[in-house]
Image (spheres, one colour):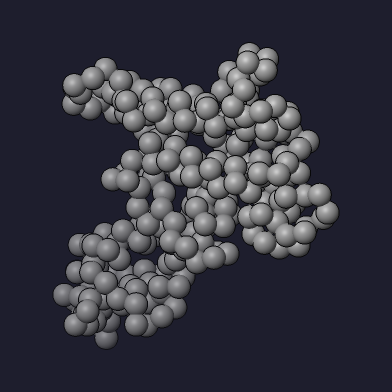
Length: 255
C-alpha cells in the first residue's frame, strides 16, 4: 500500500507512512501553538509581531478586528472538529453526535495524538488541507512584507522565507523543519564558494548580516575605493567580500 501523501510504500492498513504521520502530527501541534497569537492578532489596531511578543502600533483601521484572521480561525476550528469526527468514526457533517466541548487548541492536540491519525481513509486529503491552513496562518502572523527569502530547503531545494524573529522555518513542500540560522549559513556558503555569484553592496551586506557576519554596505564600497575589492560589471563577488571579511587584517591596504 502506498502513502497517500508521498506515495512511498507503507504498511497494510496505513494511509500515511511513519514520516508523513509525524509531519501531520507536528503541523497540528504547531497550529495549536499558533491559536493564541492568532487570537491576539484579531485586534486590528495592533500587530503582535507574529510569534514575537513585541507589539507594533498600526494606523487606526476601519474595523476593530481583522476580519481575515477571524475567517482563518473559523476555518481552522471547522477543519479541526471535522478531522476529529473522522478520526472518532463520526460523520464529519453530523455535528449533533460530536460531544466534545474542548476548545480549538485542545481539539488540535487531540487530533495530533489520535491513534487513527495514519490509518483513517482520508488521511492524505486532510494532510493537504492542514498544510494549506498552516501556510495561511504563517502569512497571517508574519505578513509577506515582514518575511524574506533566507535560502533553500536542504531536502528539496525549495526557497524558504522567514520573519525577522523566526528561529525555525518549515518547508511548505516537503514539511522539513530547519533552524533559520542554519539555512542562512548554508546559503552564504553556496554564494561564497562560487566565484560567479555577484550582487550589489547592499544585497551582499544583508546576506552576510543575516548569517551573523556583520558588514555594512559602506564598508564594501570603501574596500573598493582602497583597491582591496574588485568590482565587476554585475557587482561584487561574494567570495571576494568573504576573503576580506575573515582575513587577518582588514585595516591595511593591499600591496
